[in-house]
Length: 360
Image 1 (tube, rainbow, N blue to C red):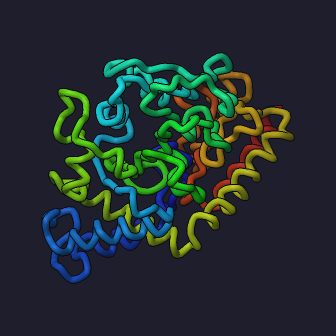
Image 2: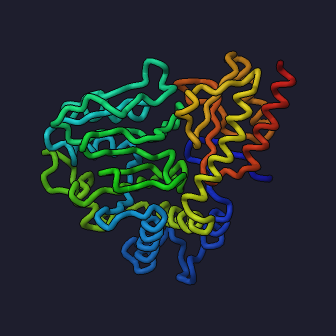
């Protein structure tokens, strides 16, 4: 069977050459006589894999030397608790709520201290990013938290919030490595890898060293202390070895493609094909304010739930998988991450045109 065009929001499409390379190495990784799935995380072979993955990620993102890179488990959702546990020394933090995941992180933070909602776009179903240039930010906040790209609602911060000197913490799960980023603007930048980088089961946390401390909140589990993980170079316990190995291959692929500025150009080109069609379509319409549109996740609707369902079913039959919108919003969503080829987006738009003609 030939491969489908997979528009899933995550776990999501991976570069074919990475999958082929992993398949070739499945039984015997580079002559060691074992699969990476079977080897000890304490072995020299795996040590080389994780160190090379980190070096390539540092290179891709130009991560400053005073930041640690941690390969952890528990997904981005576990970080909703780890962040306040590690950073909330005044027991007070600010959250900008622009979607489901920021909302969940905000709710989690309330368990550990006072979480202040600095801004929200809930009034319009999270279809825009609020103006964050001059927020009322209490002086005693430990950090300001954002979810930079909203997978479900298809919005993206084009300008980072003015945190007025406070540490910025950002969940970048669904825009990770999609464009160049200035890591020095963040205290913590983290994301689950299953959208743009690798298989589910790994979360990458990039954290400034001065934020890695012993004085965390009482009751913080040993495993959730950034210091535990940083001191052990992500090997405090058995890490998600195979996932990290695939991430490393994706980093190599990104470098081979020309790095993050090239990826940004490619992603802009792909997104433009789809958004240009949505903007002139009589049947389909995008749901996000134009200036806040994500390059990664594109939600759209027909305005008729039955027609939406018909579209999703016919698209699936035609080889376009996972176009159904998130259960909380309905409609459709095309996730067009780094590994989605331009041909996939062009084929989707051709299919949408045909569907529109048949259902006008």
